[in-house]
Image 1 (tube, rainbow over the protein chains, first blue to last red):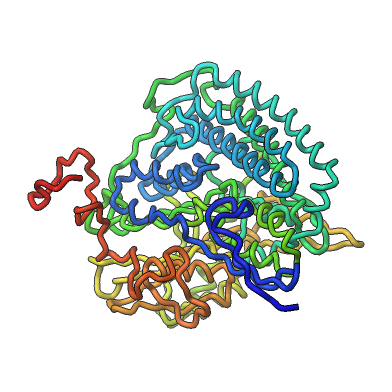
Image 2 (tube, rainbow over the protein chains, first blue to last red; image 1 turned 90 degrees about the horizontal axis):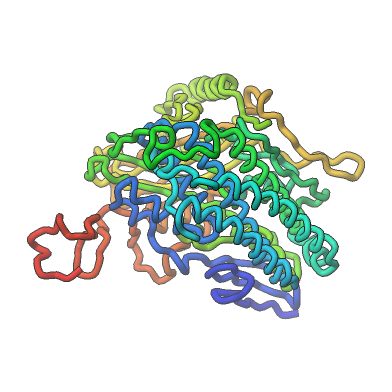
Length: 378
Length: 221
């Protein structure tokens, strides 16, 4: 049969953002793919070169609309590495809570977006309902529903609000019950299983070589996680396990990637509950704004020739900021800021994964890698 | 209970890489050293100052002898006011993740579960920072490592697209983040390009306009 190129995107339900996947098809079978990115390139790296270190957090929040807090924290850790800042332990606990709540919210919106693609609209409604609880908690912390601007270089600005611990425990326990319902519904849905099982096989070694990280690699049966491999914050003091799937011999399929994310949500919820229990000073205590218990002292300027970077476990994989100080601005601004987006390298790999499958499998494969175009195009 | 790699094993492992580099790259100007992160847990990482002409050989050595299996990021810097021997810099961040495909036993795969507290020597996950200096030139370039790590492919595309550093031997170089019809030679992260905001040549980080220059008198922001 004659081969032909078709364009999926930039406006297509499969894309979960604004990009184009050019697909070469032979009948129903995908023969070749070319991903085309850059539709929402905003030049964040260039803008940040003329910003103070404290003002960059706002831009990092807007890198990803589904996972703002993790990106802000990713930047903050790199900036602390550049400026050499010590962070109080209580602040680290608050950060862990903020990041893990965000991870749950991000995975929920992923599941909510993934399921309608493959014919299950109920999961979308249920996931957004549960995400609402996480959004409420994050709103209490950051004051906003989407872009929190929550962490500060040296700690966090505000302590946990009064009564936050009680509400968080109640909502997280409710979430742990409700996620079981969603899981049960999906695992018993023949349509969901038929469309996700046996499509989009990916092997860990190949994924890592292509630059794919995070839950996608853990779905392949490897317990690699930046949170223990390059430890930061207080993850070593909390009670959690790395979520790993047992893939088939051919590698991890879309179903494994769904399973690992659901499990990760559960681990994140447990981690938050544990952090509330173990927090120095107690989760019910409320320190005033800028108290040394929650905000360390930080420098304003970076020295000439200093650099800082930090690998961070984002909801979609390993994110990283690289900051170089110095230059004409004499350290007030970063001279160069470079952002490593996990999805920038995952999208080419996911596009390669589709080769050999049918056109109808493209949403099930692409969606299972959790694409986010805001961070990809930067 | 949570887990993490042990600091003393990580330091030992980083030192082993540095020693191996000193032996293998004797006689070249390659410098390897153990550095520590300045914040949080002061974790060690390996910093390598790599000569420009040896980059691909060093990359292959890292990949196949040191087990560095993940290319996290390759990026470029235009040091416009820097010394003549370092007007451009390519910075590569690599990771040793030691990820292997799960072994198959009697038809089933077995999960690869590593216990971080006992990982030693080459098994310790390690961060690498490679810096490659490029002297003053209008056509900066380094060797491509596309064939060593597939992950370097799109990183190199992006670096060329935004910073304008070319990668010799890179196949299929094209614009990735900017439009395909961007003028040849336009790379926005080079320092001669200022951020413009309407009539302003430079976007001041100054919303109230306290730092405006006399030149801008009368212009509306």
